[in-house]
Image (cartoon, rainbow, N blue to C red; front, side, top):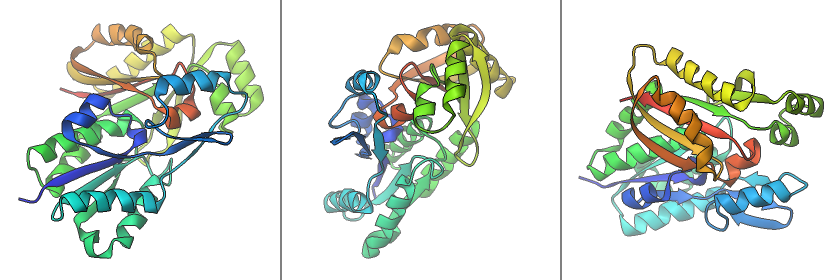
Length: 286
């Protein structure tokens, strides 16, 4: 049976222990503070990034991997495993050109193109990182690509996610909302709850005043989404401050039996657009 190798990009925000455990190959995006360029998760940690983000007067910029970056990654894998199949799982094509770079790289590797499958997660951060981690677990068990894709598509259909943004400042800096709205929202202590639709596009769910009310509302939304479900798997993302998610987890544990929790750092590229203080929750039935 041919080996299946899982490739993803750095916006998957997969915890380092899972990356190592399942030998997941990661192609990094870049984040730039002016003239300073860093490979996401390689040259700059999440903690270092958020410290610099708060101090920076201007929003950093981000860029996707080039097709050449993917060609290099795929060729390196084929050098080690010539007959393997590659499943390359990436951030939503509605949010980044990373998926298209991977597709173009595949077309450039003509002789090996039929050994590479590129999959659009239609999600972001550990919202799709958990798909890559699950895929890598199945690959380690010897499952073929087709079976793995079926499994992660099923997981995607069951998983629900919400993001809670602490401040509107970074959405405003990134051009997502006007300055007046950001200032008013800050004065009113507005905490936007966001999600991602089936096409992989971020949308606003609700705007709630106060963080504690907002996390409570997230729990209510999960209850509505998972009617009849009592036991859940949970993954939570935070901006290099694990304490941010503990209140939410306590509220969630009051209404669901939480089987397990994975903690994920929201990395520099995603963090550029949502800012510090953001939390994200990904839940699916146990």
